[in-house]
Length: 123
Image (cartoon, rainbow, N blue to C red):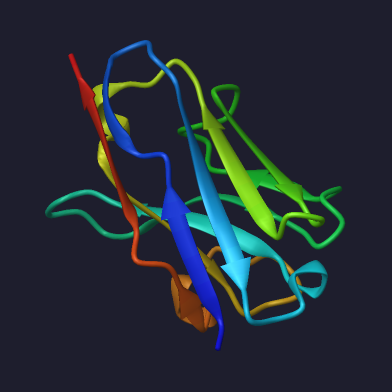
């Protein structure tokens, strides 16, 4: 059974940092891209960042470029999202997803999702 478990969310002041983790199991982790999406209340789901199988392909939404860094440790079956210089508009539930070998910004193309972790940035 494919499982994705996010952790690392929490409450932080603007300008602070958090590191999210997405721990995967139940599939050949090395063969799949991993993507982070977020959804704030009343807003559409937004693609935040994606990392390809080897970690050489990295994609970021314009809103997080220069502040967020995605990485993966294939030995630990885990993807990380380092979030620095957080802003109140980063407040959302962050979810990781997989199911594709390459990155795509359409959430409907991913078949497996974690339960999400809440990130709240206070001003």
